[in-house]
Length: 479
Image (tube, rainbow, N blue to C red; front, side):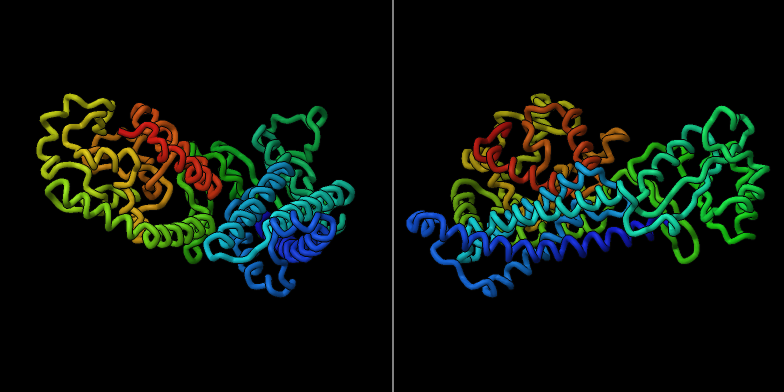
């Protein structure tokens, strides 16, 4: 019921948004032509040396629209399991349009494309305005008589239960009226409700056969607690006999988790509890961005890496690349690569200075670590020593953004709640990196990582990446 209608609604919305986005570019193009006529010739030439024919932009705009669709989907604009409020939809529309604008700007800069900056800006503005306008019209139409589904096509739902949870479920379903859903009423399970006092009480559980016979009932939702599950079998038997679809609200489990979902392994239903990000399209988009960005940076930075490698070799003994075993996703061991910033054999003398640790918890941090070479201090402060980790990102051991990869010895000292930071891939940068790094104590560091996991989105990754540049530039919190 919910998923089927939600999918239909979201597919229609996506098609409408895609068509609107395609229409937005010609409108932006014609507006740019009109702008050329209004602006003085000198200013117009500075803004855009040459405006090409409309069909010359079709290829790049098609790629941009594809990336926009991926961004909008990853941001959750069409996510079936979440019903967004009007303001949330507007926010996501604006964010996806900004990402579209940034993508076109990046392509124009990276590939030296002759794209008009005013044209790109107008495209992003028109696209956002049209998409917001579509949602406003849908909202107004829904308020008036419902979207797509007329009254005779509404699905009538009866809720088994009168508890606050049952009432909350009824309120939630009422919010989905645009999908053609309506609540007929509630059925008392425990015999404690008084239909003369409480509204929408159709009767008790023993009256259910008569309620079904005297009303048009399309579906029944069982919202009980653990004490009332014994009557569920009777409800299912009655509904199966009459072909009425029955659903059970699975909110009676005691575990407090971030996400709950249900899927099937062949014909066996499986309920999944998870406190880690699991939205497959968003995670796939994150991986694609990791591959693209890390590949580009490795190619661009390769001459500097070679030069720095030579300097490392000339200033101290030992290998250029330092390899260390770290813990990745759910504790998987992998080899992390860094430019060596310490003297050879530094790990062997760690025990001699461990009492000088300036960080609480199992992590060792020291402001003036005597094991660090003079060149290594610069490499660490500028985070240049971490550039080889782009290879870890390309391999899939790490991501650009995520909790820092810990040592196996550190993980052994984690408390149970701290181990949840291993439920996502480690990253080169993270909230800890952009929030003060070594100036933050270990307990707060772990809380920042869990906050990132609980609130993860592609937009949050983008914000962290953008905040990383000034932090690295000024060496904030580095030791």
